[in-house]
Image (tube, rainbow, N blue to C red; front, side, top):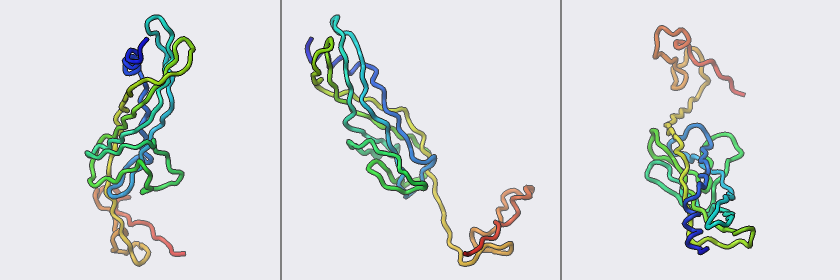
Length: 182
């Protein structure tokens, strides 16, 4: 059995693409959106020329395609940030410059090793790549206003004004509740 035969089999096996995750449900324009994947070695078994072959696929690089013509290739699969909120920079986060809807993906490159009939592991020449399913990303714009005084029923400051999109909706014509200062 030649390494070339094993390499061909390695590239044809159903290596599972790691799933791409986004830290929050939405992305904010001009803020870091954290992406990460859940990699791990995969053990696959097959028969080649009558021999039992065990192949171990090991992820080595990740190409994050953020859906806006920007890509990052790294050896870091990323990680979930243990904080609530937005705009946490990580090795795999991305800053979107436009609002809208897009799809992000991660392409993972694997190296491999194999064992024939339980023998010693040998390296497989070459690599195999798999791409995740697309992850829907919705990029929003956020407007923040600072107001000097608390909102009251008679306030006219931005952010305190009643929402009047639907004149038939009773709740839509009420002002934001007053806020208090400590």
